[in-house]
Image (cartoon, rainbow, N blue to C red):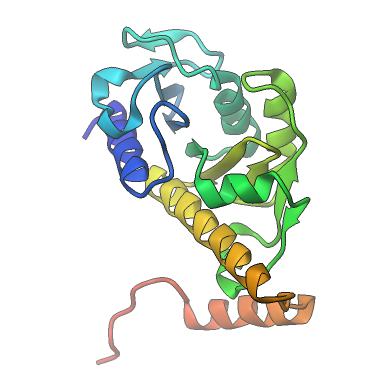
Length: 214
């Protein structure tokens, strides 16, 4: 599957999961000096390879007929600054709601540590601006996801599949926070509890398939 086809397939998956609505959101993946990114105005639930444009790390169009998404600067900045192979930006309902209220998404559940810990909220800035790109990159430091104040969310990954997984996990965590706060004051995991989780995960190879010992 070509890089453009992979980005199109990831866009359709995210739309099917309810994270991408209409034309709101964008996806990119990088191989070497080629970055495949969704075109502007594309209905992402129907995205195909021809709806994805390939650009250079500086934004020069290398392949495709569509103008890249208006968040091109955001994707280029995150790719360059984080070294991630893929970037997913969504307006997922619970993540966006959290981004309209919280200053960070605290750690209520140990699976959030897969994203690096507390999810930071980048300061509000107009979409498509360098200010937004810089704020998101700072919020992503040491993390696999960030929220964008009054806007949405961004998830990254070492692969496109991982970035999609991280976006889905972030939305689940935001929904969990919403439900927990509706019931009362959530209990946060302490730093020691978080450290214990990391130690246990390393010792048990948590999250990876393993063959039974013979």
